[in-house]
Image (cartoon, rainbow, N blue to C red; front, top):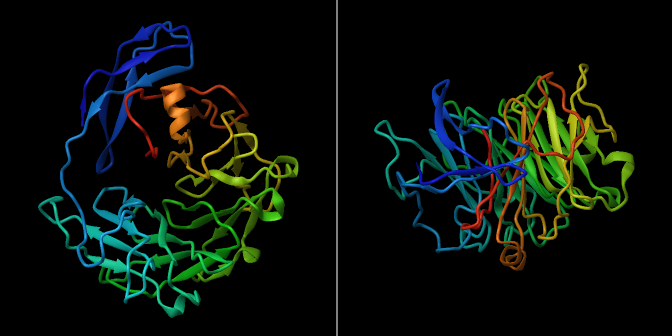
Length: 366
């Protein structure tokens, strides 16, 4: 990726020098946006103009071409394992059953290929009576080591939705329909798995009409299937706001599962919940309320991400085409945890990333 003219400006419109830097982090690198902000009035808006050169193209040729291939993608922390979904894939002559393809980086590095290492699918053991339109692969969340994957399925002909947990066998990922555990709810929207694979978050924006987040903590003996009623903890909106649709406008976990963020569509706020010292318990009192943005009017096309260490929050709400044409900009807002290490409620972002020349659809953060 090459920087082709990054621009940064503050709240008064003053411009500042800006650049991108690759900073070593363990076995890999983090991409940092660096701004010489002396004298700046926050928040800063950064408009990166970049050129991306592809290294490889991953594909599959065995199922009928669909427009859903790569609708969800997840990678391990070191970039050596990649999960790519195709919720509309035809499996065993069943249309739209869905599949997730696993690609493992060869010793010589990534190269264009249509050969995958494993294919994950569902069969009758899933408990879904009709796999037609099961849409397995609507979401993917992967642990940092690439050994655990949480994959969403939204079967049209069922009143229940699912998140299936798959774990890598001792010999490596291989094609299978055998999952380790499944977690269900009536109307899930977002699913997330902590980087250490110990905590699962699912959401239901219509639980008790105001929405909720469900926390599952890995038992000592390993993961087992649970319903939302058996979750370790239920996280609800502040003061039980009616019709808040908590969890519709994004959801995520910190790397160790100690911090949860849930987006509320009614007021467009993000609620942060911190795990107590004794462990997760049900609560309707968040640790902090972050930001205010346009309430999600694009049917859940929101991205809400926490950095692995829980210090940075990024929110992006994909606008409708008419909104984009009217505004001419697509901002992603960044919020930073204070230096004392404790999140506090705020409406002021630390920085704003925007692009006037591109349609952003998803945002992620290391």
